[in-house]
Image (cartoon, rainbow, N blue to C red; front, side, top):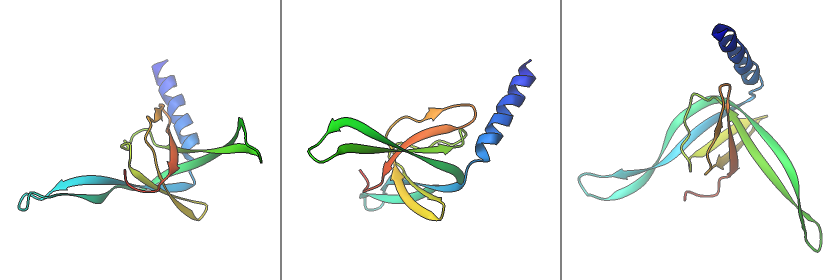
Length: 127
């Protein structure tokens, strides 16, 4: 019985991963302390490259109506392997369909046996 469940999860994960048509690069803005000068500075460090992934976009209309039109909110969701950890605040550069865009996230990912889902925002600057 356990073997059947494991086989089903493996098959489900493979099916989801076959839909991945993008790749992600993850960059962390790390604090570095120079031991000689005792100065602290930040440095961008690539912690993950060429990680298969998929972006999903959802447009939601809000109930708030302005004078001209209802507000439209776009949700950007990243589907990626559950085996990796991406720290909150990391810069995530995704190339999908020939388009490269930089994102970030600050929430907690939803992690499943087959994948994890991370809600993204467009990257503007390091916090």
